[in-house]
Image (cartoon, rainbow, N blue to C red; front, side, top):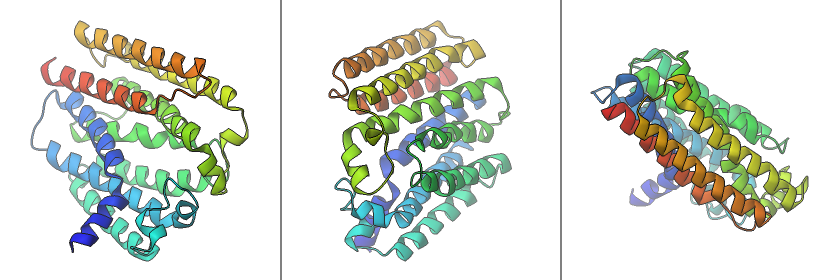
Length: 281
């Protein structure tokens, strides 16, 4: 039982699930202007859906993972669990997440759309186009909207749309910075990759533009009423200046100085600032 639990944890890609859950928490706090009893099932639901989508992805891509050094030790390629077993775990996780989100129909529907988009659209496109990360950015945009509607917000509200747009733009350089590091691995697995389309220097320039676009999307959020506190706006600007500095270092090195961890830290800083704004603003 302990061994099976460990395998399910590996299938779930916990760090990614936690980041999705944190962005959902931000949406909830901004909508509810605080926390209440609805927060717990909302966040657990998002976490389990994200974990289930990750497990389903590993069931779908076991053949690809087996050809990549970065992923060859995952449970499916090593035979510690079959693709069918990973599928069963994924369905169980998604079903549990959906049940927890069922208290709010819009949240449930958005959660299921996210799973469909990640496992049905992005995972399919990843095998046929090197630009799959752009439509894949939708996966990062939806979790804060799930939290927002779970907290009683209108999904068409410009405030949450601005937050969702930030996470959509952020998701693209987040993936491409990883690709810049492991491009050879993706090529070895037979996946179309931008590292085979552009030189390293060209790809670094493309990522640089997307990182700057992420910073612009961030500092633009207060214009849509996401926050009205001066300290929040100052924090968003300072964080974005820091990201721009790291992006410039990456560009000057032609991609040899990576900024993958920095862009993740940046997302956590933005999540923290927006959440604090909702809690005490």
